Image 1: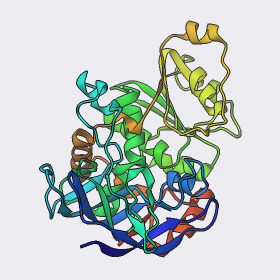
Image 2 (image 1 turned 90 degrees about the vertical axis):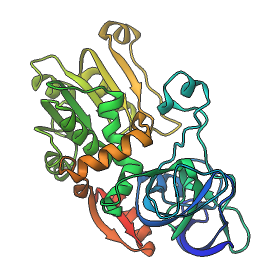
Image 3 (image 1 turned 180 degrees about the vertical axis):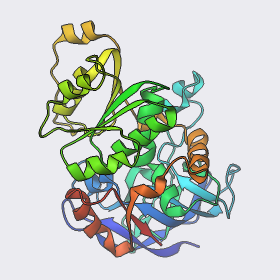
Length: 361
């Protein structure tokens, strides 16, 4: 039987979100219904509300979530009712050309649920990142459910579903940061701080946090930064070079995603170093670089999709590291809120007052 639940919907572009009644169908083949326990408020949800992703309104927002599998459809074997899972928005298909060549984190044919959740009127909802988790229960593809140790608190586990995984993965998976190396991270919000935490996990020795807000730089130290640069007062490239024997960092992560920050990342890395773009630019942004510098500096320019993560591999490992006390996921949670607090959380996020507000059901 379809179920009626409460969820947060963006009905029209740029308008405040509202809590609506959502109809969740029974899971079909390959699908699962998950009782959501917690869901983080991410910038991407705000992008959806502002029409920055596409114009397929209305949107059921929320995607950074953890919860309990309630029911599964035909053919589902990886998860079962009662399993504690983190939701992911890149359920690999296992058969596309990336998967076949042994690079499933690039999967070019990821799965979402075939059915749509709807409003009471019957109007179909577009689920944010194919998840839609600011809701008491959500319908997803079973491959979007990654089973992890249920000892972890839902409000911290869910963060691995998007921002924290994107940051940790940008440093470790995409950037390949290793023991004794140097890394600079531009932009110390949730994703940037996660990149810093990832660099610490990987054994980086010089970890440089860069932002224009002293409060954020102070927070970044708590995740492992041992140097900070305020980009308002200092030339970022010169400051990074000064902290790395004049050479630049082995890896520079741009967690902002603007042409000016990416140029800083490009020039602040050492020769043959790696620049990683994990902040999401808007479609109108363009980048101009002297081609001789692209050639002459060598190394790599990479974009990081979802931290190049493989949820089935990375989520359980990171949860275990957290439970061992080696990954302080709880530091990302600035506040827990109710479902009707999402609009206010967007405002706090926009002002840079929180790392993550988390809806707890």
